Amino acid sequence: MDAHSAATRYIGPTGLDPYMNRFFNLLPKLGISVAGSRLLAVRGRKSGEWRTTMVNVLTTEDGRRYLVAPRGHTQWVRNLRVSGTGELRLGRKTEAFVANELPDEQKLPVLRAYLDRWGWEVGRFFEGITKDSSDAELVGIAPGFPVFALE
Image (cartoon, rainbow, N blue to C red; front, side):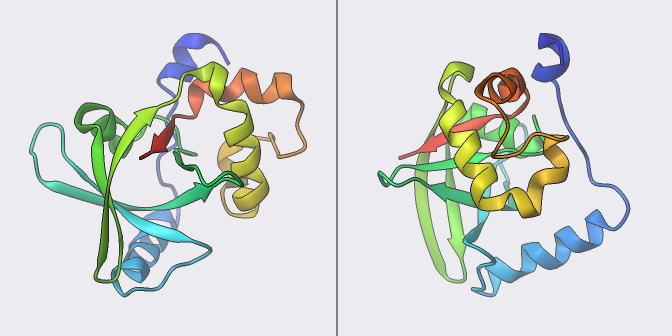
């Protein structure tokens, strides 16, 4: 993947994805977490309105938390880059956060941990890369997978 295509990489919903997304986005609203999922809420960069989507929040062994965008440079990624803040919601619980995007050279351990935890769910978006892929392979795909540290 060249640098330009990695910087604009986006895999949109296909087939049954829109219906599955609606269903799975409803679960956190009802207070149901699937494998640690949360409803991400970020203000739209143009409208200022809250936009929501389900995400997997990765918590590492040292307690740090991250959001990884397996579909690439999505609308929520673009909105989060502009706002720098958002909310994680589960039922009536809302947790505000500040997000800092990681540079590509810092993504390796986060991408490996994310694939270890959720590869079964998001593996198709990683196009053959798994938790067992080499460091070089993970570093090679890093530009196409935005990662945010949460504070």
